[in-house]
Image (cartoon, rainbow, N blue to C red; front, side, top):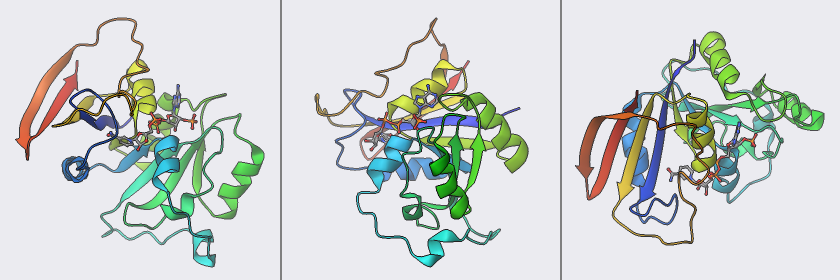
Length: 215
Ligand SMILES: NC(=O)c1ccc[n+]([C@@H]2O[C@H](COP(=O)([O-])OP(=O)(O)OC[C@H]3O[C@@H](n4cnc5c(N)ncnc54)[C@H](OP(=O)(O)O)[C@@H]3O)[C@@H](O)[C@H]2O)c1
């Protein structure tokens, strides 16, 4: 068994993942899903931490669990061990803590970085993270029922290709961005057409919010 996976993304009318004025709508729609965890791409996390203050003593201690804490848990696949800025996210306004997905190929030095700071990590897969196995562990060991993506196109396409997405939530923003930003579905490769059913549609401040169920 695995959690329900909601792919959530914002694009311009020309399908680009960056370059909008208003990203508040993305988080406003995301807040409706009541997910247990957010699956964040490592590239997304890497670029989100534009400013990375030095670590303090507090960053080496796992935050205490508080049942009233409404912040989400962030889960990030990082097979190459690129992220040494996790303290920017841990116990932040974005999330209460981070769980890292690694693979058998993740450098031992990075696992040491994670252990020294008491980050939970899950080893799944040989080279890249085996997303199916990791989701099963999140369901079985962490009780995760629903997980929402917060990533660009690489992670969401990898999930779609493996049949691991249950719903697609798209916020289409009223602008054209042009070639400065990548397309959301630029790396999607499917063996056959994937049929979708429209579950919900709404216009919010000129943004078109669509939810499709994957059949
Ligand atoms: N418009 C939106 O809704 C939205 C939302 C969030 C972020 N963004 C933007 O998106 C950009 C980043 O997007 P991106 O597409 O470059 O990166 P990304 O979505 O962050 O994808 C990279 C992640 O996918 C994993 N991955 C890729 N292929 C995989 C596979 N076959 N198996 C397992 N894991 C796989 C990578 O794991 P490894 O590290 O292990 O390789 C990494 O964690 C940023 O600029 C950010 O601002 C846009």
